[in-house]
Amino acid sequence: MKICTKCRVPKPATTEFFYRSRHRLESRCKQCRYAVNRAHLRTNRHKPVVLSPTLLDRFWSSVQKTERCWLWIRTKNSDGYGQFWNGRHLVAAHRFAWEILRGPIPEGMNVLHKCDTPPCVNAFECLFLGTQKDNAYDMIQKGRANRNPPSGDNHPWRKNPELVRRGEFHPMARLKACDIHLIRAAYKRKHGVTKEIARQFGVNPKTIQAIVARRSWKHI
Ligand SMILES: [Zn+2]
Ligand SMILES: [Zn+2]
Image 1: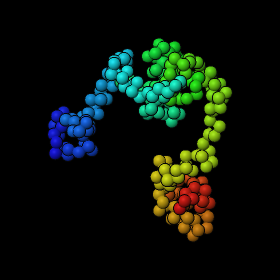
Image 2: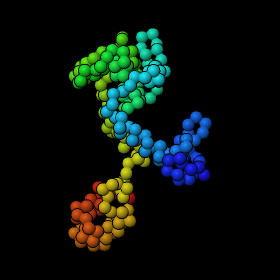
Image 3: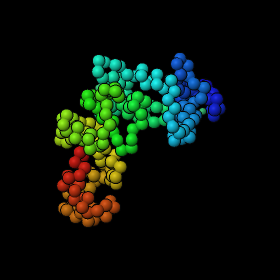
Image 4: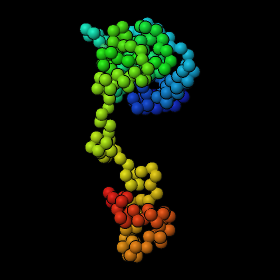
């Protein structure tokens, strides 16, 4: 057991309860540490970002320079753009590069890529300022537009069927799996009196009709 220096609650000395810093565990428990972090973010959110040498070091150590492009090698978002924590917010790496090398980005303007390489942060050669419209036009010109929006076999539900919440796991479900068997059996017995069954289960007759026709709850 290890006593947290903040809340004084003894907790098991494992990484489940304490963050690890280098080779040892921190003195404050995860819960207290998280609260401090959040308070810090709350009070500093609106203050301007300080471009300290360590911050710039951290930025440039994530960049690998090639002949023309300077490629971001750390975290990227789903579109491939670099992500950088500037001490206050998670920002796009190429936008941050523009701000430290070329100056502030006017409101409503986007930083776009000439080289069509999203992780590139070369503000001198590859990046230029443009509007959202320029970006869309540029995207179609360079054939970067999403021509295959998710549908059919590409849809996330088809790709990861185990993640879809079916039946009683659906947040809007009012019936349970065991009710479905009862409803279908009752429908067979009473030969199609949905109103009475619906009243019994506290749902709409249409719901019962859908269940017995197997338009809903088909996996049961
Ligand atoms: Zn604590
Ligand atoms: Zn480039």
